[in-house]
Image (cartoon, rainbow, N blue to C red; front, side, top):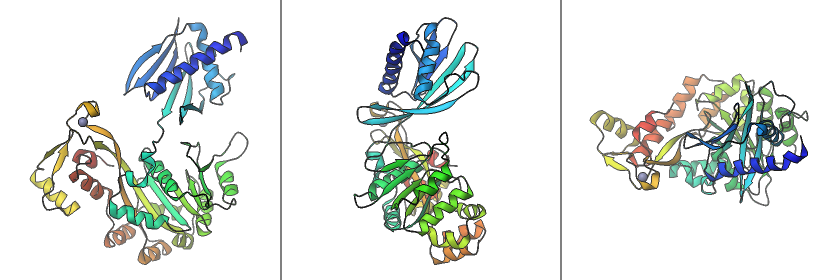
Length: 389
Ligand SMILES: [Zn+2]
């Protein structure tokens, strides 16, 4: 790069990043056109143009972003992906970067990961009912074991695990997260990630990490049999392991793990709990409106919540919520803590239906039941809960 033009480019990129943070943009688009570069921000799902620097800046802008995100600046013909972190005041933001070759050069899109606030990282603020919170706290008070946190992408799994580690961390305990990449910087918690470029794969890194005498460990993904085995072995030792898994069926995860080649007798002793979860939009408490549900829905709510006269709430919209009727999101949960009978089923490699039946017999409350309880409590709407997949 020409050194004369480097400093201005650094300044331009910094000011684009600052503007994006300031406006709480979710994405930045950098699009080379014939005569100029279009720099656009996506704010509240709408694209707006921020600046249009002259065409001559295009390649240097792209190069600067490639350097920041660890990409190959000479590779211009193939799409690349990377990420970097920016610090604004005391918060770290992770930015995913993706390039794509287009007619006039390369287009770059930055995706900002919204950081967690301190409030979001408290177990009592995630949305668990008091009974579930108590049961969950008991599970994580153990010195060892495996807690599987499952759900589709963007279902709040990371918040649950981070909040758990925050509740547990202490100067007398070794706490680690291991994920690819590190999603958010956490205070007083050690964080590690694999380094494929240096030859350290996810599985290799994890195998080395579990020898570091760890008390509480979060494992970001359990994609392979090898990783599963390492996780289960650590949980059988003296580590409490939280494993995040993209999986939609909370109870079905047990047969799934066994299919991955984990020995039933190992999962039988290692598994502490399975937490399944989703996110629903939280009703704005300032403007929500209560109404009497129609007959069939009332009956459904009675059965799911055990309330005699359940009411529902609808989104209205006010100043506090920007007219949407909603403010943020809240978790909907289902928690399986295996009892002796369930452990015998794991040992016997029982089919999913038998596991589900045993869980129901033991008072397992489903996501929908938990969600409907939140709906009658005015925390979300019936439609949000019914939209859960
Ligand atoms: Zn409102």
